[in-house]
Length: 265
Image (cartoon, rainbow, N blue to C red):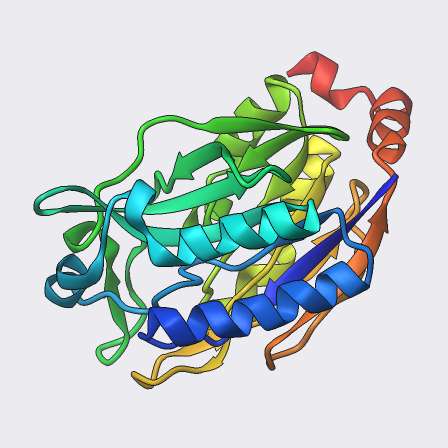
C-alpha cells in the first residue's frame, strides 16, 4: 500500500514560473503523505515552436526544471515522476522525455515519447509534433518499491499494443502524463484510460495539463487515477491542483487471478 499524487498544471512558456507552481503542488502532495508524485506532460515549458525550444532547451544534465525536482525529491525523500520535459539530444534534435527521480535525487529511469501527435482536427486546429520532436524507439519499465511502472506519454495512450508489451514485461502500474486537447479529451480521454486499465488489469496514473494556456491552446485537464477494473478512483476537473489516493498493488494480482486473460495473449 502506498499513496500517489497526480498534479495538474496549466504550464506557460516560462520554465522558472512552471517550476515554482510545480514546487508548490509537490509540497502539498508531501503534506498529504504521497510516496509517488507525478506531474503532467511538458511540465516545464508549454510550446511546440521548435525554433524557440532549441534556443532554451538543454541536455538532461543541465535542465533547470529537472535540477529543481531532484532537490525536492531528495529533500522530501519522495519518488517524483516528471511527466515530461523537452530536452535537447543533439544540436537540432529535441525529445519529449518522461523522467523518474528517486528519493535520493537521482534519475532512476526515463522514457522518450514514441508516438508523435500529428493530427488535423479541423482547419483551425492542427498538430504536427513530428516536426518538432524526435520520436523515441523503446518502451520503458521502471522499478518502484511497490512494483513495476510502464512509462508512456499522452498520444501513446491510443496504441494499446504498447501497454500490453509493458504489462507482459511485468508492469502493474501505467503512467500517462498528458496534455490532451479539449476537442479529443471530451470524446476519448476517459474511455481510453479505462480501456488500458481493464485490458491490462493495471492501475493508471494520468496527470494532465488543464486550462487555457498563454498561446490560446486549451487542454482538457481531468487528471485522474483509474483502478485495474476500470473504476475512476479520483479525478480533477479543469483547474490546476492535485489528487492523492491510496494504492493497494495487491488488487492487480487478485483481478488477474480471477480473470486470467493475460495468460491467453
